[in-house]
Length: 461
Image 1 (cartoon, rainbow, N blue to C red):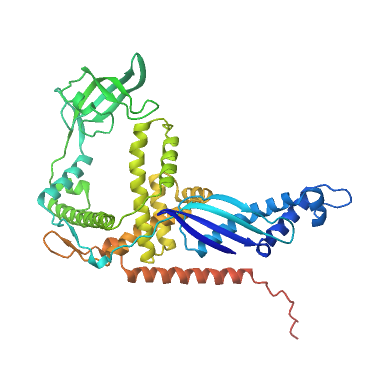
Image 2: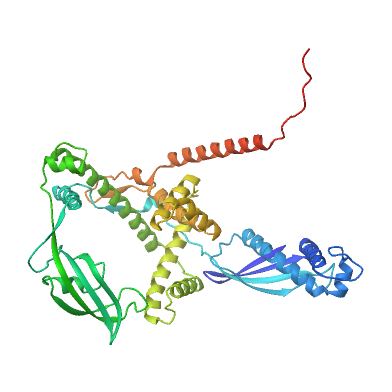
């Protein structure tokens, strides 16, 4: 098989492939066999019709069409591998020549396909990353302590106008024109949480129990999402959360510690770990930003358009041009990041271990509220496991890259992120462990499949 590549755009190539008759022969033989099993020809049993009879009765065109359809994908994938292309989408294939008759000729086709562009990444040791310091203040500890007290607080009704942080039990209805398009009743909402309608916090602030007000807001969901509605809201009751005193009794109630000082010390440690975690996230984000600044990443327009169409189709908003523009910006950014991180993963020779993949899938299953086994089975049925491997590889690529960069805080101190980005040594140990487990399992399977010796032994005298 011969193949050649012509670059049409930085992210698009034309692949020309020529397959001689001998290489196409297995597909032609399969075509004859398949057609022989399908046709009824007097004097021949199904599956036993000779090729020359099929040529006469069915026609060479049907045979070669079946053969091309059967072998085209394999020839395309072989050409992609030989030319080290990295397709980002399905190709547009045009068959330009097929064998004219049995025994001679060739298959020739072209495939236009969007591919991952070649990127020249900078050397990682030339990149400087600076993150915020991780010192824990008394305010950080107090914030965590207050959050813990919130969990043990009680709601108490108050006879005053509602203020930020209060909980309001409300009735709400939304109208577009004269039509009521949404309504809720008896819902508890904390002012300031901002998780319902835009403008609701302002409308409720200053409202006392049994008072009603109106305001305009875009709807946040449903078939009228984004449309402005006239909203009427009534506060049935106003409550504030009373917090328990921060003392030794509370420490014993809310934790395994006997004193408030011990609890605070533990909260300080949690805050320190959280700050270091924030540093790791900030370092990853900063590294990605530095790489994007250093490299021009061409984005394939066809891939972006396909992703935008899929997104809008799922939302039933294909005609929403304003939303299409927003989604296009987000899709372009996401695909640009993906191309960059795939290149980085390839440069760093990142490998995804089975344990890493399973850990990621279990975490994802929790986000979807599914059992891990059910979630993984659903992904397997949808052929999505390779995409999940790609996600893990991209995330790991940033972690592996950070191992090669000295990260400092703004005070000039070197930041140790090994707790969050791992190490090459740990990766090697995990890889060796998984390899050993795979070999042990293979040996156990081979032993189980081996035939058992059931020869009867002669009895001893």
